[in-house]
Length: 188
Ligand code: IMP
Image 1 (tube, protein in one colour):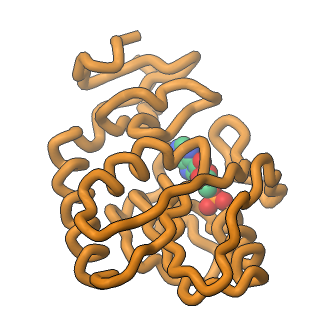
Image 2 (cartoon, rainbow, N blue to C red):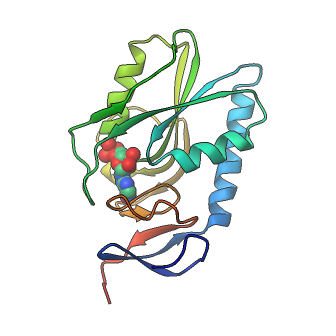
Image 3 (tube, rainbow, N blue to C red):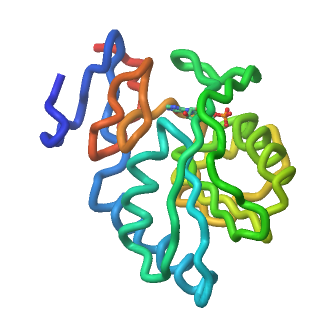
C-alpha cells in the first residue's frame, strides 16, 4: 500500500487492486472550473454549502477554498454503500443542524451513482423550504443513474467503474489518496 502523498500507478486497498484514473492536477483543474461557475452564479449571495459525509469531505473543503463569494459550510451524513455495491437502503446518520428555510443551498457530493442517496436528501431538504437547491458532484456515473434530478455542477462523468481516492473509499479505506484510482479487475 502506498502512502497518501506518493503517487502510484497501481495501489492495493484491502483485498483489491486499483489503477490510476485521474491525477490530482486534473482534479484541481476541475474543481477550479466548478468554483468559478458557482462564484458567477451566486454573485451577491451567501449560499450554504452542504457536504455529504463521509465521501465529500475533501471535495467540499477544496471547493469552498476556491470560492470568492461568501458561503457557509455544513455537513450531513447519509450512507448507502456496502463494499462495491450501492443499496436502496439509505441511513441518515447525521442530520441537518441549521435552518435552511429561505437559504440558497448547494449540496456537495463526491459521486452520484444510482442517485438514490441524493434523491433521498433532496426530498428531505425540500421539506425545509430552501430558497434554492442545487447539486455539485465531483463524479457522476451516468450509466448507473436511476433517478431523474439534474446535477447542476458536475465535475466528471464516468462510466460504471468503482473508484477510490479523493474522498471515495472501498470499505472505509483509500479516501486519503490525492488521486483517483479505478478498480483493476485484472488482479495480476
Ligand atoms: P448512490 O446512492 O448509488 O448514488 O451512491 C452514492 C454514494 O455511494 C456516494 O456518496 C459514495 O459514498 C458511494 N459510491 C458510489 N460509487 C462509488 C465508487 O465508485 N466508489 C466509492 N464510493 C462510491
